[in-house]
Image 1 (cartoon, rainbow, N blue to C red):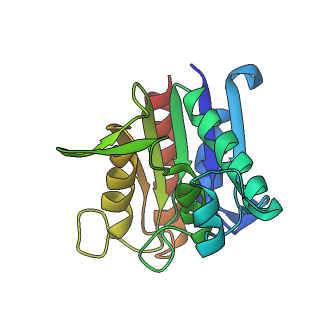
Image 2 (image 1 turned 30 degrees about the vertical axis):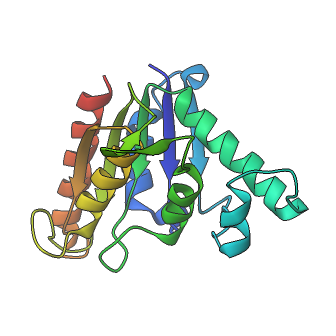
Length: 194
């Protein structure tokens, strides 16, 4: 299995989503693993200039050229992997801006999806995604869980429809609950990866 690990927590060594993922991926062969920490190595935030540059063309400025090359690299990392393991901690009921920046750079018309007469069609197929989502409260299945639906939608939009979720909830609701939630999430991720 070739795995692409995407981390998006801003909490570094205090990150629960990183702890869940590290507990599993540290046992994988380094040759089969590409890891990208979006907080340690931030991506550019999409603006009008960069959005125009992602369409390509011969008259791109240097900033647009660099971002287009980065987008190509990020998409290549996905294409070279069998499984994506994505950390999507819940910040203010949605994903971190770091993860959204990655999504904005990999969702490219004509490259990872295209519009057809029947609607959008994802072009990144044959991949599996495991989304590790950590939360301070209890949100799974409720109307405050905007992470699950969003990640399922955006991954499906580019063609990744085999998506599984690992939840660690209640992390701000007491040490015992948090510890159990992290341990359970590590075990679930381990089963999904093996």
